[in-house]
Image 1: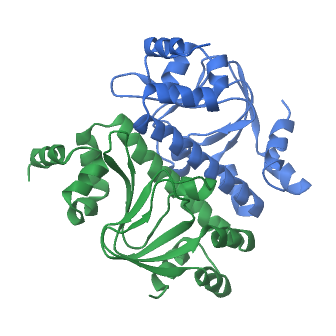
Image 2 (image 1 turned 45 degrees about the vertical axis):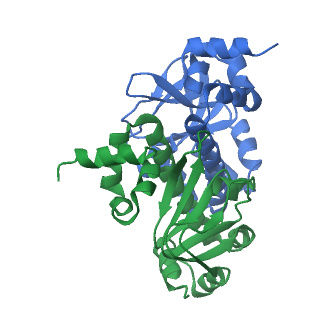
Image 3 (image 1 turned 180 degrees about the vertical axis):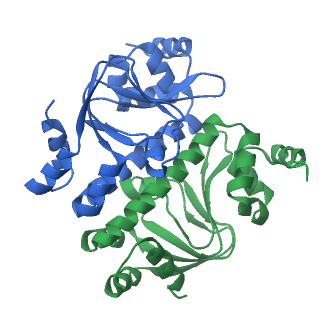
Length: 192
Length: 192
């Protein structure tokens, strides 16, 4: 697996010299996951940040009633991290799972924070990443609190149609925090 | 109003030279609010970051049924920002209000991002601020989704007892996203 995609992603966000970029990339290691493989379970430390080269990861949590809620779906060319655990070092409250055969590049928390201390531009890269993560995550969680199922479904079609097109109904339903039956009803409400 | 508290707060988080610190502080301006004064309304741009010198701010949103949910309470010596709007420039989905006569120092978004470009350590300060904000906000919003009212109340007593001790029941109820009647029942469940 090459680091070309990751390099393009990073250089699209922040300017790094050739040496700085090589140093950053040298800490990323490849990993291959099979479909449905669990990468992180609730209660485990969240010590890695993943870049999806190919495939798809989902981050989910399990409610008291045993149902799964999918908080985040990450396709190619994006990072996936259970950030609360990564930042605090506390056990993760969430799971991370591959939904397809997936190729990743990952960096450990220790190496990541080491780069922050040595490369000021990496601080900027991470700051921008945190800003985006804050906005996406707040909007996602707020949608569970302030929107009904139909509003969440319409937002999904507008902003992340790939989730509906690419993933099984069971996952889409868990992303909306509704039952598969409710998802079927929502889908049939839409005039084609 | 002096900037001593703010200076102590910043220097407690990150090392700045005397010149850097003076430059940062020079952009903060004082503001006085009366009890119940609204600082930011839904739909307005969120272009300021506030540091509470004395008093108390609350950030809240209004649900479709008209009820208020308090997302965040900020007492002395902490920042309060409706970050999604501050980062994206989009209209705020939330309100910010003073709950007591309140003294603030504020910086505009423009000046704040200008400092990021000139002072690398300010980038580090903001990155650390974002990390803490991400964790606090995610845990808050997740508590609305995964915890029942009693669990939220117990967490509040453990982690932020000042909210219960210092603020009226109506505000505490909105922080828990329950009715004042439910809050009374929760309070009476606790054996003294």
